[in-house]
Length: 509
Image (tube, rainbow, N blue to C red; front, side, top):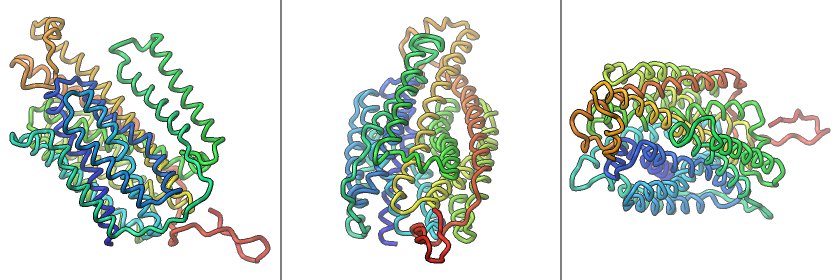
């Protein structure tokens, strides 16, 4: 429990770094005179770096000291967080957020790997409840703390980044004292840096295309053909590399199995829910409804309570029964229903209805997110635990990255259309309005007639992105239905197959 307290504090630091910024981000981008695309990339940059580095950290955890890797990631995270606080424009902020993503990806996967190396899958359900509780507390406290900091004149939004520093120092010292993880050094190991680089490059090209298509160039254009074909080609080469290298960063022999493959597919939907919900709901409450950052943080509490209660309750029930599939399926269905309700909202929708839908989304995430990781960890031996955990976290982060990027691009197009239509109805030439050069995210700087038009455009456009989320969540439901029912094992490691001819029945992985 002493070591677990340090690990939970590390996880808290990683989680709160994302949620504390989510509500304050409209004010941050407005203060830096950023655009909607830059708003999206402040989130996407950290998610992309986290996604690309996650499988590398997972693989390194199988090869080197888990404790040392965790301490290195804490230092990376602390330095980059402070750098974000000193950013002078959106370009610098995006760059520092990418560096912060390296630390975030490491912290998230290494905590899961270390806990899995100490506790058997059956008992791990209860401890996953603790993980879910910490995530929920961080997710609840983050927006509130971020909104309060942004609204406090003598602090300002920069302290949303600076505040992570003391947490990381305490976590580092606590882990140095309490964490004891046995490490067996493996000789002749190699890390697949080529594969990781190709995966990151391929995903980055496709995300950049999603961000700019429809604005900077048409859907049917040479730029689209070059970026889509180029991104797919790079990912194809990455897949080939993973099949020939000795130590693949994404072990294809693991993700080819039925349970890992289906769990990874479902994780894509959960990733979109976890990141898309917190990012765009905070923006909706501030820009679409006119609430302050602190008030927006309070309004996101229903979703976080859903995560807290469902993760804690389902975690204990999983440990008691040893069955994980029923809770994953239920979570995926509840998540889809929550998205469908959110898809009906506009700038005048009742906050009670939105709160109810947010509870459903949070409950769906809480029941499925950690249990999907648990389902995969139950199918692999201890020596592959880091790679398997890194793979599922990688694809969940990839779902969040793609989700934020795609939904952000859709939102930007919908908002632009809505503002143009609103200006036309008000008898204002959209071209002349655009010539003013003001960011639509800096509401305070807009003249009064424009404020109502911009708020309505953002409020009405948000419902469209959650309809897309609901469609993707349905894919997650289908994937979870085909998961193979299995009892969680009581041992930390899989039993080795018995030697032939000894009269015992071999235990297959």
